[in-house]
Length: 248
Image (cartoon, rainbow, N blue to C red; front, side):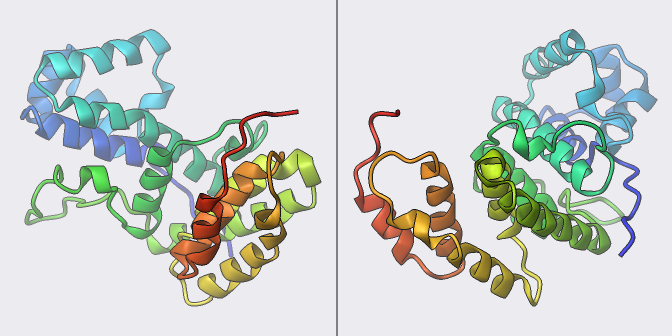
């Protein structure tokens, strides 16, 4: 399947920014005036055509400080970081990030980032935002930063392929494998559960290890993903074990 061209590389961040603006509340024109930017610039941020992540660090920091000062929900503003991380990971899966290592291989994404990705990939609203979303409105107004079906399919296919490739790298690919597999487990497609369960069960040997191991974090992710698929026992066993207190 060919990869759909993503024209809004900052769509998740833009959606969160829209929620931030509406929490003030201000219109696009009102917020643009308050921030001293062109209306087209703000519209580009919210649509994802102009990703916030492309801003200079100082300008982005200033924006994050200005929004709460204007009356924005500070908790929503904090979600912009996770949204930018989610956009970068999604863009890598859709072919927009072709240089350098995969973003899942270079940093440990947070639970908030995972929730943002789940929101974009399958429409699962982050628990912390459930009470902060606006009521559905008439007209072509997005109610979630969810990817189009074709983009969802390509993204999950990419996560599966990345999982397999990382597994072949051994220890060097441990972080990438763990994170790609964990995110792939959010897939709700007809064959997704079987693939994910099969792949996870191939890693069950990690769950039997006691004490410190370089694969401790992967064992935790494996147990959590299995619980999401309806097999909670590995996670319960994992929780019962004492946490490792020393490293080699």
